[in-house]
Image (tube, rainbow, N blue to C red; front, side, top):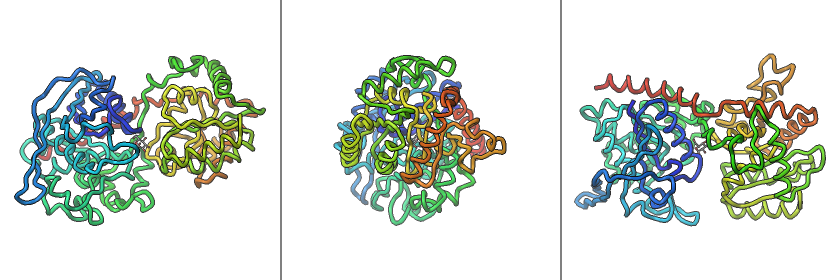
Length: 500
Ligand code: GLC
């Protein structure tokens, strides 16, 4: 298949979080499976300068014409640059300096650019024109930034062979929707009569995610549980009605991780390599970590980590409250995350209150994060909501037990027989016989501490190393997800062909 991805993020060129990893992981897996994948993204300054950026060739000029107001047309012009990223995967950068040649991706110093609406309307339109010119079999739009690609293909450009291009809207995070003032409709190039509740309007605004959801042949959420959750008022963020109305088109596929990049048997950041077959190195990593961070460990010892963005979604406020309880339980805690300054300050206070038992650093540090994954016994994932989540998968890969709030993709990727919906008959005899982590609900500090206590109890039976080996042996790669994706795309392509 010829597949066109439209996305704001693509690792290693540009990313602000899990989106960039997921998009490039999937592209790479589909490319490796023999498909011809092109990823169209904005030519951010940081993407053009990134070490991961391949040698680019100029694919010619590109002009977008806007009519913000009757009689007031304006143009944005730039060029398309292209290069080969992975085997079978090409990247095309939409180089409109006026929009993308800036220090940040979405903004600077924690803020957002005031014209982000226009910046991603431009991405959607450029990607749709690219599709019209190059006729892929299917277009896959990632998150709200790319939603307009789908609506433009299915409405203003829906003619001739372009009708036979299949479309998929991927929902990596429904909390961000690209809500814009109704006046932006003119910039989008969409017809005015699409501005209604079954079209691109949502609560009086133009909603770029809905531009994808309303018109896509399939909607794919990044886990089956999240695909159900977005249909509820609690997770739908105002779009639950749209998801329910199109639930026959909605699928859920969990992400994988790059198992070559995250591999404790070859990871040069670690004090010692290890694997499920030869797990001894994990102990060495653990000891080295305690030493390096100047942490004490009272017996029997349980080293707990938390890694990620200090953001509302990730539930660090709950973790903060749980710290005293974890210390009382006998845990030693090492945390790494950047983002919210206030939370960082409070975490630093906790570190001061529990010297040698609690360690925190406010930073994004990939090498250190891998040493934490490797050294810890438990990795906490107290997310309020989590469409898929990568932390629990990386944790499993490094043989570290994820203890996670039972939400979204965490429910689909962590098997916990203590957690009622997962329970099977044979689990009654030995729940730890099949567990791949711990789930807890509701999201409170008390429930989090109780879940960690279950792992601590396991530790005392001496069976923790068996469970760790089981985690390391799990297949968290893109192999299986890519097969599910292939099946969905094949279906979409054959339906779309029948349309023309
Ligand atoms: C978003 C979601 C996260 C998901 C990632 C990749 O960052 O918050 O749960 O893993 O996208 O799909």
